[in-house]
Image 1 (tube, rainbow, N blue to C red):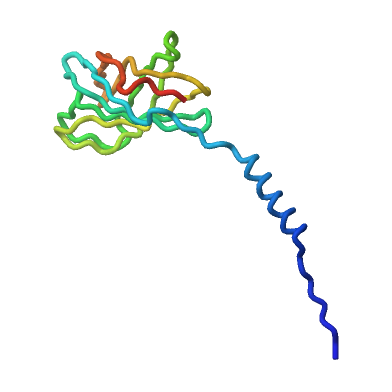
Image 2 (image 1 turned 60 degrees about the horizontal axis):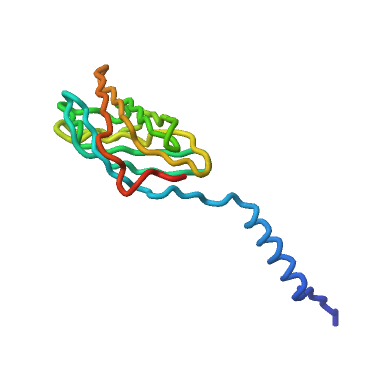
Length: 158
């Protein structure tokens, strides 16, 4: 009869594997979050109208995005996806400014509120950003909107 040797792993081996896995998790980049995730404010867009806007922010490291949905501007005609160029200017840390821009809008039916984004920008840990203005370009026509209220519940903090 032949003797079959089996291998068994002891507690020491199991602990070693567990420690290695924990070390790998500790080195993984930490998830970051912007607070608040959503804020509202009012915009005045001159002859294009005025109304409220909802801003939704996300963050992945130093990259951040902000999506904008506003009743301040409504589309008189159907607008295709990715055809609205937008630039959102935000007050940075109370004194400077930064911009988020892009043209990643969904399709917008005639008579509907304009939605745009995500608009892309760069942030640093601790940045506090509050919307100051929004420039929207559709079919070569530019609407510039100025914030007429502070963001509620407050600025985005990254």
